[in-house]
Length: 380
Ligand SMILES: *Cc1c(COP(=O)(O)O)cnc(C)c1O
Image (cartoon, rainbow, N blue to C red; front, top):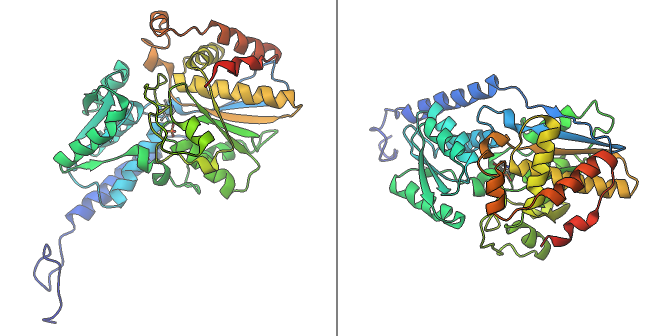
């Protein structure tokens, strides 16, 4: 027995270590499971557009999570990932780089677990999101350009001897892509009783790229015929990287559509599971956001407009080819977060965004099925 070694931080031989850390982790996982148990699945809404003959549209409404966006799922997964890897412990200071929505959801979970939380965000982040983060007890640290968030978050985490949650790296792996109630499994389960239960396409924009990675992998894993289209915005690196195969491309100007479009190709963006990509003008995203908000009688966010325009584009192509089927996309968050920007005519004017031509084109398409494909001529 006397040759047996025990690690230096452990008590003398013949006494086992305390399990304080493990007790906290068990307690923390229990709290996260409680949040899951209190949550119902989000609706898959099926709005009717009379011009879209033979095409059924479904929108997974992620705005109804307790923290208002699809990032509620990601934040829960990132916390589970950090705790189960032994990186998040009692009292660990958590730091995140975010354009806002993720930080809101993470601030909520940090509050549930009584952990300090710092969000590193561009100064342009909407005031509604900043308010929400601070209400949950989080601290906001601002940087001038979105490209700075990564190293500043890393540095703050090191200084606090804390943990950098790093959504842009871990989004794709913190989510269980084979199932376990991920968003893809939920969509396909909810589609089961529909006329076309396997969507022809799922259409999604990319921020971390995590949601499109989960959906693309799940489609392959379950050997569904469904294809995945990712829609990119004006100021973002994803589309060029997808087309050129060069993951080192960058984009200088910051994205104007909050939550999506990135200055670099994020590690969680998995091009291999994407079947098609399009890039659309910001004016088209915001026009589609306005049109969809009117048709749903409630406001949706800018990235939902991007998704919806992409959905219309795919629907137009399918109708032109005489194809029928279902199409699925996401309502990522509510428009209430963007009253001072996308819903403010002064903001649109100051940013030189004229949504009228796009708005008319989308309205006509939804009502008559007539589609003017020239609309994409000024993309890229
Ligand atoms: C994060 C986000 C997206 C994109 O989701 P990813 O899984 O990160 O690619 C879209 N819309 C909003 C509002 C978001 O916050």
